[in-house]
Amino acid sequence: MLTLSYKNFRNFLRIVPICPKPEAIGLENIPKDEPTLYVYNHITRRAEPMFLGMTAPAKPPIRFFAEITIVSNYQRSRTKEDIVDSIFSRSFQQKMRKNALTRFSFAKLTDFLTRFFIAQMSRFQIIPIYLHDPPTRDEELVKRHINKLALEECLKCLENHIPVAIAPSGGSTHEAAENPISQTIVPTLASLLYKRGKVVKIVPSIVKERPTVNKETYKKYLADRIPLCRFCGWLMNKIKASRYERPRLIVEFLPPLTFAQANPTKAEKILFITELQHAMYTALRKENSTEIIG
Image (cartoon, rainbow, N blue to C red):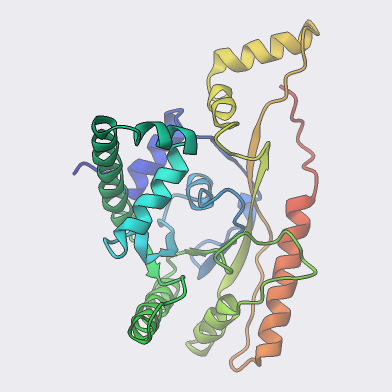
């Protein structure tokens, strides 16, 4: 099955207007030739890794943590369901399942999309992790094994100055800094690497959308990538025929943080995560100074 490498896929998305194109702020905050861990927020239903990959430096390629279901046939039915819900509306799905012919065609299409998606993700050298709750004791052992391998792979990458990206809570985060989800994977990684003699630079990476990227606003984002459409919007503003607000998708890289402790307590880890999430929440809510009107 034809798929693209990380570099080619990144260039393809930046050149061909098939998805929103983010702009980067704070690239000077990204370390060079140092262990780097990008920590990004989850607000667009799994699209953040794509936006981060399009804006961060291309070399070396980022290794992303991601659930094992997107890089293997493990629980493929779940992956297929997620892909279908991400691409097709509920009403369209219902229409396609009304009769045998369209139901068969739709099943073949979604099966192809699932196989293509898994094949493509496998090209990106994603670090697979087990996120969902295991239903059995045996599955719990599988989860521990997979996540142990993921941790070892992450440390190996950081030691070799290959950047890694993670959403620390695995869900929608940074929307309420007063009640942060205090998972401690980020300070744990930093601590383990510190024991090996290196300090990881933790770069908070904020995906900002105006308006929120969803099925309703997607066309507006794509139109903004076409110069003629942008010109028409600008012209309508100039002649005051109507007000046109350009959609904006920004990835902001904040100054890096460090957690250089060999044997931190859980309370110290939670305090660091609280401060990290508060910094990301503040940046996420802060109005950007760049003019938005085209």
